[in-house]
Amino acid sequence: MLPFDPPGPAPGVCDDPELMLVRQHLLRLDPEGRRFARVLRDTIDQLLDGEHTGRFDWNELHKTEKTHAGTLVEINLLRELELDSGHDLDYLIAGIEVDCKYSQKLYGWMIPPEALDEICLVVWADDHRSLWSAGLLRANRSKLTTSGNVTKKGNRDGKFRLTKEHHSLVTWLWHQEPLEENLLLHIDKSTQEAILSAGSGSKRSPGQAKLNELFRRVQGRRVSRTVVRTLAQQKDYMKRVRYNGGSRDKLRPEGILICGDYPNHQAVAQHLGLPVPQEGESVSVRVAEARPHHVDQPRVLLEGRYWVVAGPDDPVQVAPLLPETKKKKTNEIY
Image (cartoon, rainbow, N blue to C red):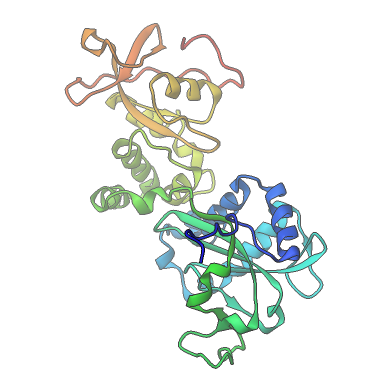
């Protein structure tokens, strides 16, 4: 008997040559998992359809919509990664048939009879936990069963499930990775309720009131285009953020800036020490003109004066105008 346990295989390595070929191909297409993560975020948002429904919580989906999630994940990954369709299964990867299975419950994938003994790409995402995983599994029929059924006969639809004792058979590509946060789902309940109830008595533009309340209460955090679309519930939803009547105008008297994804706006956010908004994102913050007691704070030059992130004791001032949204950065803010 050895005095120590010999090391096991490295993470993501197994003795299945075909599975390893598929793994190498997928990692070559998406080395850091960013494309997978984007597909999962976009697919969940596609199902929620916030622009038309105002929904932002997976639990609000109908059962049929949740069932359809697997098909959408399969199709959206096919398009994003430009994979070939399989003859008998979903994909043909490195010349090998691969089936795609999605579940919102980790290890809850249902394997159809035609995928038995074949390779499955198993995908999981949980919007409430802001996590996702993707791995590969050889659907060995001797390692599959249905919940509470050890006879290996499958369920009424003839589908099978990975047994608990064989969870370790999944060869992970990415495991428990962060999923882009669903902001409306994760802010505290009192803030959420205040945002959703804003403008409830107004028939004119309740979406504008909701967005104003969002940028007023949720500062220093990236707000995605999806959040804006869900609250505005109109076709030209980003109009509700801009100047000329949008939240930038409405909140300016309160000292609030709303930086967008334009290079000049990104530079303002960076100089103020804020999260830098990426494509389709906005970040709000209340600012104050720099005073001696702000000596150690990051600052930005706007309209000929230096501004800092306002503290609770700083008086409210009208916020300066953000630089013009040109494609290239100017020297105005340096």
